[in-house]
Amino acid sequence: MSYENVIVENRENVQILYINRPKVLNALNEQTLLEIEAAVKSFAEDTNLSVLIITGSGDRAFVAGADIEAQYPLDAVQGRKWGLLGHRVFTLIETLEKPVIAAINGYALGGGCELAMACDIRLASEKAQLGQPEVTLGITPGYGGTQRLTRLVGPGKAKQLVFTGQRITAIEAHRIGLVDEVYPHETLLEEAIKMAQLIASNAPIAVRYSKVLINQSIQINNDMATTVEAGLFGLCFATQDQKEGMGAFLEKRKPVFQGK
Ligand code: CAA
Image (cartoon, rainbow, N blue to C red; front, side):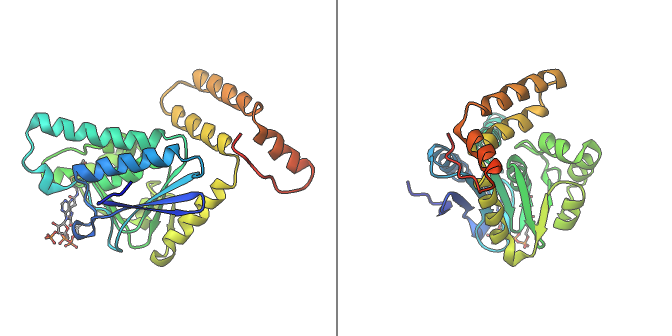
């Protein structure tokens, strides 16, 4: 499938998805969101691919937000539809049963910060700046910002970032738990690929179940979460990968996982 606003590149079993509208700092319009959705679905279905990295084209921006020119004329009904589209695409990423890494190579603002927060792990370049500037435009965050940001940094910091609309550096974002690692700008993608390959070398079903369980931890109570964790933990013992992983440890060799 060919895309206009995203580029897809495979490095063995790791896929890199570039958001590609560098002239507008990779701002998300409807077509871009639909192309991200199509690309993520196709990644999900490809059994040869294990980990997805999302990054921005050019060296200035990850994504500078939802496209302001596209949003300007919207009425209330269209605005709601616009919000629901972003939620649909970002929830797809969040709930995808394969790991997704955001490589934040520059501005991650508004919908861009929200896209990064829908990913499982956030790696940032030292040049990155993050923020939720929506209130400076007369709107609230619309693609999950009030929810995912609060879960990542707590309500106090989330309110500070959203109410002020100020941008913060990658270092500050790391300090408050909004990004997980910060790297020199030049090595960000390389580091993201390295981490993706490390994840891809582990047992795919166990990684998948772990993502499901960690995601559920914020939605269900502890008793329920414990029951679900025990269930998926138990299910791992029905996989060949469990016999391979533990067998390899006992035989003092490296495991070779098949995802079965
Ligand atoms: N939408 C549309 N176009 C955008 C854009 C956006 N979110 N962000 C940047 N652009 C465009 C600019 O209009 C400009 O286009 P022209 O060259 O045609 O003028 C081009 O990208 C380069 O941007 P700047 O000239 O502004 O670059 P700068 O270095 O001076 O500033 C910036 C960079 C601080 C990121 C600034 O562009 C900026 O503040 N952008 C908007 C950030 C923002 O408010 N994002 C939130 C959007 S609303 C949202 O996301 C809602 C939601 O939650 C769903």
